[in-house]
Image (tube, rainbow over all chains, first blue to last red; front, top):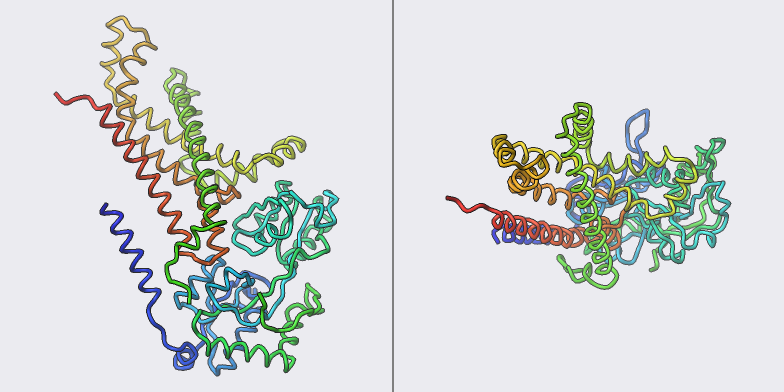
Length: 273
Length: 232
């Protein structure tokens, strides 16, 4: 009984702490003189460590930097794990998330999403010797994905009877594909392009199924109940779109000069559920 | 603004169903691994006590490997490593089966058989040799001496540590999520990533683990008291 009491009061304490009142965040950030931006730091080319300078750079970092600039304060980057994204935000340890944050309805009930600043094509990687070329052929098959990713949720939604197996990270999910434990690996196209390149010419080449499984808008994550800050972020993103800066940043990280050679086929806009 | 602590969401509809299937998988894995571990532990103990040195060394090596390598690594090795040693057709066949569950079961079962065999062995060694001599003097043979005199006492001594191992085994089934076994922790994590209700999702899992663990402890206590010899 004593144990139970301790647990319950600890739980209650957490709840109370989380509920502590906050002033307007936009004012707070300006008064504090810096914008703390949570980012993954392990997700090339969104946020990753530059091997030369050891600094975290990337598309997510550039977008967050633009928000900081619009506020007239310097940006402080905080590297966080996929799992820790939402707690770090809701507990106030970061002001904003630029961390591969795919929009889903359930998630949008916990945090606010800015307008989408990236749209991810979610595709499926298969072994070339499997002969799979269409999504239809993957019906009822085992498909791997990273644990907790929206790719996994997408597979369940889009492919009837597919069984998803989730692993801790992308490399384990890919290993499972190569070893034949699964027939497909679902992830963002950007991740898959790299893996395909690496295995071209090896004994075990892989291919990407052409048709996207689904597209996923990504937004910046902001705590609920901060309308002024959210509006400022959205206004800034819209300005970036209008001035052409958004397209320029995209080009810098995904354009013809990069390994990805992507076309920008989206515009910054409100995410509609 | 959503409520701060809202168990209703994670305990409704699809999410509740996830907890239930996760719980069932956890229990299946725990019970199956426990049976494997216990039977193997008895075998290991018998082999180790046989008067044949190399058998002793082999069991000792088995035990030290399983005690000194993290269980997570053992699980990953079984799942990603061992099938690669098999011929291609066998490997493909295994992959079509529910191999995640199978390899998790084998890894956890083997690991805890090592611990349990040590508990059993300590129990047997705690019984003074004179007990065995007395049994022999009463014209019991080796097996009957073990069965009627040594083992009943040894098992009583081994009881509490075995309950402890059972608890550890039960909790460590959560590591099976690393290879995609959809047990309770896996499902709690899924629910967390669907809803972003971190605290609530793990709170429920915590409550379930705690309930079962306390249940095992109470049962163990009860059994220990029942098998106690009345003090003179």
